[in-house]
Image (cartoon, rainbow over all chains, first blue to last red; front, side):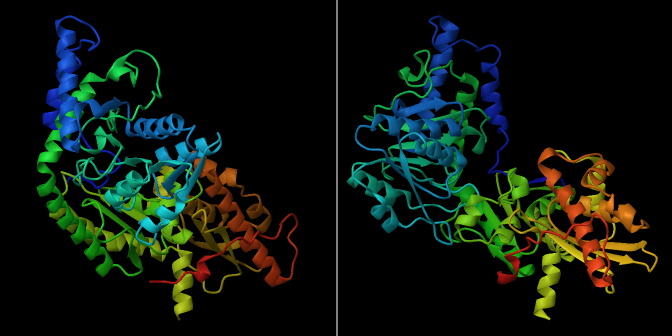
Length: 392
Length: 146
């Protein structure tokens, strides 16, 4: 069997039809959109076409779309931009404890510089409570930033309701939708979103391109200063090839969204049910119902995630884990700890994220190989030995 | 992050996995918080030679590989020689570890020392230069299985 890529939340490949569209912008169509002659105008037109494609996919206006260098940059810009814009009105930000580090570390930076952030807790499924949110709001709150879909456990937050609360209280609402766009329907108007971040390489576009949607009338100041690109909001010569590719990729993803998410949900459920029924001492992390169609996250007790990934790799299956050893720190994933997992169970988590290349056959192969791998690691685990002895 | 071929070999084909029923000494070190626990079993003959060594490890590739290598290295050694097996020696024998994994090799040295300490306690002897193990195992006893 060919290699099985179950790590689409980390990144996706560039779709061949998208690559075809972007390639000429590296060679023949290389003009700088800010220049005046023909090949520059060609680039400018392509750039604006991509802006329209992105706007359409989000239910936004083209002038509300700003291209950035990454989803992370979009998150940084949204949070620091709003904090700065309304600093005379207040210094309080509300976010959740399971945000991506692009959001969390930005808020933590602001906390050290005169701002104050409330990190809302989540329940066992990874959902914030709207009641908690209402209670956390102060007269000084200027920004609520809550992710649309969690990158580790796939939980979908009640974005529309959060947006409603924010709007009612006159607070700006930003959502990190990097894992959601192209996978679940997004409509910034219907969902009361003021600012939204997305990234091209999670939806079959290239790495190095992101977008910040900023609702008309929010005079966000730049994070990056320089030339007059992006209507004086985001300086730096545009990554035209990448932006054109993002436009094409998001248009394709929007068109296929319903069908593809139904297809992936089916494979996802097969994997979840298959693992939970065939391997004891396992649990699903994240909400069963309010979940990205392509996300599986399961904890295997008594074993450690990196070992699991290495053995899966030997079987040609690529996946990820929330264990400390794979996070590059000594602590396991903050998301898994926030939903209440004890450390050792957090260390034994496996994230499988499906994509366009995923098939039922791949799920069957995974389900066939996984039990032996888990047994092998449990057989060498002192924690499992202790458990068996305690059980008697 | 890249593991050496030797690390991968010892991870994929770990030597000495298991338990020794009538072990002369056992040692468990590590901490579920940071995700590594090593348990080492030693069988030591009357003349003070390490006849056999086994391990069980909950941990990453580096933790398993260092457990495997450390138990290989201690077999056949006298207690004095066993005490001189350092984390650096284990790491060198594995052709090195990525920087963030160096603590795994410390755990292997600590596990060997903890097992030797247990042996000394049981025998009622003092091994020159051996310190009591730091016991920071915790939490996992309280965890409910599901």
